[in-house]
Length: 397
Ligand SMILES: [Zn+2]
Image (cartoon, rainbow, N blue to C red):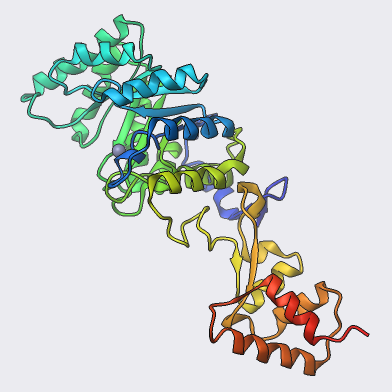
């Protein structure tokens, strides 16, 4: 077991052995780019008002997030307005706009994004009828990036689904045109972590000092794994969405990638991690997309313990036996409950001892019978309900 120096969490020791670490080309720092406002809003049925976007942006900034993607400043009027409002509200994070490199008029696309005061023009190239031939595509990469650079913009460029033998050509064209950042996409969630790490490492070899951003979808449940594999390949920026929102099966969840980077790689992101729970809940409310109870990091079941041995170990201070992260780290609280799996007495005895009570065997049996009866009509009894019941049954003399 490898314990965090502040005892906030622990990690699998094998993660840190030399043979494993040798396979990674970890960057010095990783930038969290939160994409909840843009990609999160693409979750079916989700719409954030500008006021909600401001509230979300402010709390992301309080956490210390360095960058967010706000929307399509060129394609959607309300998004352009959002950029201006965020600036007016004093948001200091870098604000990125998605940009369609495949747009009919790429010059207008750039002008509109600059007019909206975005800090980053994030060009995406997708297969589109506008760009029919390979030459059209190659010319567009040069034209779009060169024009944006001539307007002094910070420019990112990326594309998914590029055949491996074309990818270096894409990167070199973008570099020659002056691109500031390359984005590697797994836009359909179909990359193997090993392959995605290879693509990022291959890209790093071409682009050298130019930073790489990764953007991964979750169609096979691998978005977080692929994002972390991208960091292992040398990516310095991770594009992530709170609660894993996004198109279809969603994107790499911000909270999972943050905790993965901190715990599995010991990369200090310099974030106020205790904000994670609050942000997740605000986004759950505004996105109208309920979290599954066992969602990693922020699901309500993550810090609830019910089974006998688990409750006993938590009560006796051995959190590491059944938890990975101390709940306070992400602004969560631990909850103990008494239900069908808590009736083997170890948890009951540990709780009574913590309460300073010294029960007889008969009293423990009575308590167990009472709990059994109660959970016939409700799922479980809370710690407070247990305390009340125990005080009634166990004599203190
Ligand atoms: Zn996406």
